[in-house]
Length: 443
Image 1 (cartoon, rainbow, N blue to C red):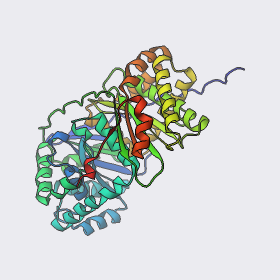
Image 2: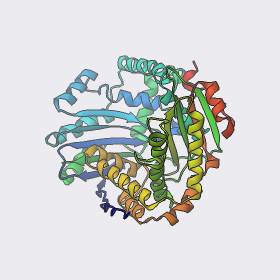
Image 3: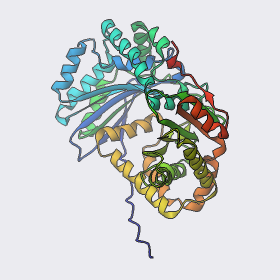
Image 4: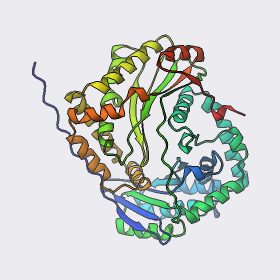
């Protein structure tokens, strides 16, 4: 039977930002979007996770950025955001801390001014700090009651042993309990005065006027003392297990190191990962969900930075089905290590990747998120355009060598959370399961 012709995949083009620099050296990226109806403005300090003195300090500091400024209380600040019909969100990762505001283009000047005020003159009110700290402390039992959180943290510790990337962004009860409002103020002031910042604006804004407004509003923050981060090690194969809470399911995460964003193998790796486990009709999901009925779903993908990458597959199953699930997953990893992917699998994977990238630049905040990745990882403006073009050129024969280098089952990291004895027995054929107690569990 003749195979129906494959639908042509449209080429992807990431808009090139207009760039500028403030008087203090902060980098500005402006991405006008003609069809957009909103604008998104964000500003982020680049941080070295090893230089954060107390676990959880960055997250708690980010929480305080939405709790008032020198000129406005928390309530007054929230009212200003509401009056503008805007949304404001602050947050942190292992590599950055900052905030983003999204609203209507006719209020662009007010949005820029309010964001700049929140970041250059945060209030750090002691009473608001104590409320934020108490909320962070009371969040730990809630997080630990979620088996998916536990299994993510166990995998994180296996992947980044002894490295700051392996620590919880939220810290743990004993670390957060010792943070003071003065710790927050001193650490954040050092960021404002000494660390590199990235300011991004995307959406329906005038690029020239917007760039000038950003240069003026954010001229008081930023520095150039950022130090390079030590790349994380490539760990040996390991199995970590933990006790599940309030669930009969076993949460599973399997994976291994993968190429970084700057590696010559990165494009091939994300195409392989997508065909293997990265969309609904991927090889793994069709097998364990559709054919075997062992799970509601299995999804895998690559997370990467300039200095590291990780492939991780996420799924869950019942204790009774766990041995079968593990057997099938390892068999498919072995197969991936030995056989080329089919053309139809690669075509579906390309479609999925292109769809995801196109969706990511449909909105100003999505476009800004990709631009932030470029800035944090010091990548060229046309990085994603070239990446997708390279993916389009790859063929099964060229991919096989990358499959064998990257998707090596002998390097497997496995995290599992469930009934510990049951999980340990099921995983014993694949190595030596170690019961991992998270720092968050220790009082």
